[in-house]
View 1 (cartoon, rainbow, N blue to C red):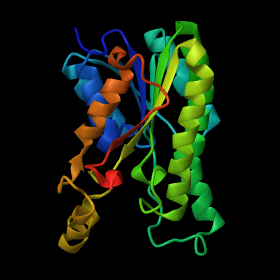
View 2 (cartoon, rainbow, N blue to C red):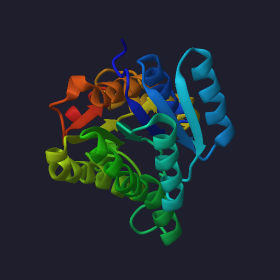
View 3 (cartoon, rainbow, N blue to C red):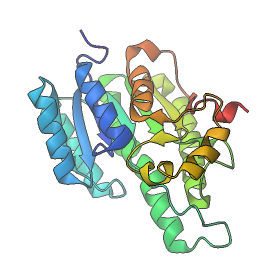
View 4 (cartoon, rainbow, N blue to C red):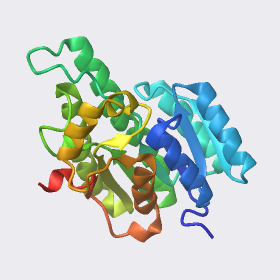
Length: 252
């Protein structure tokens, strides 16, 4: 028996990085996984690999900022697997690190907020009714250290991740009576395709490591393990929490 046996989990942004690692780990732990991403071929390949290894997976092309796409994802998940137990809102973009409050234009602001925050609203709006049918559920929103401290990211990104943090608490409070839990995860510097370019620069890497007490950069599985705990019944009394997975960055 795996830690997620008999659970159905939707994971957005599953084509690469933290989403891909979470999907693979969940499938190994017995979950039926619904993989969503705008990169359709990548999630189809991932679903094929999961099935080859004895898991169950469904891949759906998904623009997380589209309510119509969320309707399709929720309905296809229910149709294929009969229920929805877990939602991992992982999809996101970083935004421009050079932009400040003065230099961020409306296009940049709108794009980042749509993908990072509107997507969470749409996801919970569409998925919570299915969790109510089950009488339980776990929602995990991937925020960032930028949702905890002002030095964690660009202007629009910080706004979106701070929103994800408090939106998670609001859901936890309001849907606790329905036995629906909601928590946020706050990754620090994580080695993924998105961060590969900057981390390959020795000067940038050295600067980053100065702010990390553990003195090394995390990997995608560090976030996947956090998702696994919060999605499983091991965390049945955990809701409204903020789990920083950052090597100690925000402890200073």
